[in-house]
View (cartoon, rainbow, N blue to C red):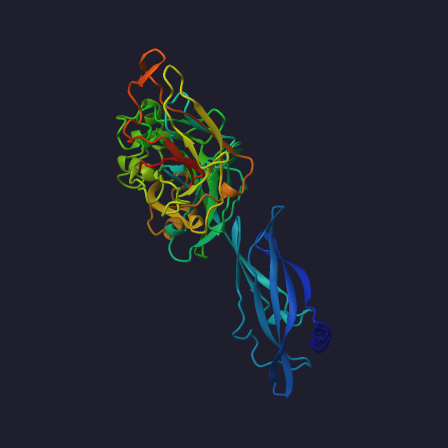
Length: 521
């Protein structure tokens, strides 16, 4: 019986040899409580012979089976799986048995596959499979249930918007229906070597709500997440038409980055799946904690409040950053839910002007630099030009209001590689205490209570066509002593110490616009 089947296999193999076409068949096997499907493609390695089958003097052929197209079906839901592999076998055509009953040393089994609910280790054909027809295509699977859960970082900076020059009444930048205000994050540095397995957005583009250890079917309706590559998550924050970043408020001191706004998400959760036995952690994107509110809690904080220049935080900012709703969660010793002075300093650092300024060799001169030396900012356009004027009004006349549409520019290769890293403690929902999720997740971290976040270039800047941003800007008035007659009191830029022209740059990290005074830095 075995010889008959082997002869049938030989016919198949000779057909493959003469036609040059590999035999590909789809199989389904039992895997835990579900089924695993895959495609097995058989092909010989031409010119590779295994000599003297069973000491009969007959040469064998080395053939390879490629396993791909995996999918896992459980409870009626089928999930495509990423992974492939090959098994190499020594084939004796006329009933002889090759020396050794295992794949040769060039084999690559087993194959680890990660499903949303389990880790599946697929092992290609063993000795008992050799005499099935077609040969060398079957395999076995061992399924280890996975644990999904989430942790609560204190905050996530999702954007920085820069104040234009001039008064707050008529000077502002407005991001209309914008998905550009957002960030791209990676957490791969948080884990020990070889434990991260990239990103799988289990909930698609949606950002789900979570509470008491459960992920609900309530989702953010205006915000979304995507992937920039296999290890990052991009959060896109939809900005409504009513949200504006206003000017510096002082006509005669128009350069003041204290009025920049840093947008802070205060109830984010990071959703993970851990796979016991495989030393793997998979990131499933972001959610929001509904213990705070049924929606994403995003607060804009002006840089002047973060660095203390504006004094104490106003109640409408202080109350949200206290995060009292998170007091009952599991916190590391000495930590609590409220943002600390260290947290506020870290948030402020996302605005480059909080720690340094750019000199005239970088931006703010004629001709303008195409991008800053750190590649954070790239020269952009205000309608069809890269700059706009900021000039004082004529006597007894209102200052002109300059308006334009802001335009995004393709970033350079260097700008696409910018990143910055920060670390923060996180809390855990008490529902995960003592669970397999928490123990396996903590074991995989480099620091059991800290996540390290790497913020990358915002890739959606040049891929979305639905977002727009507009600038409105008004220069200083002329408070002349005699109606209709100069001079203006005070005279703006009388000695050339104040800027009268601004260049427009885009922030490549957050997809917003910055306004650099010409001949001033």
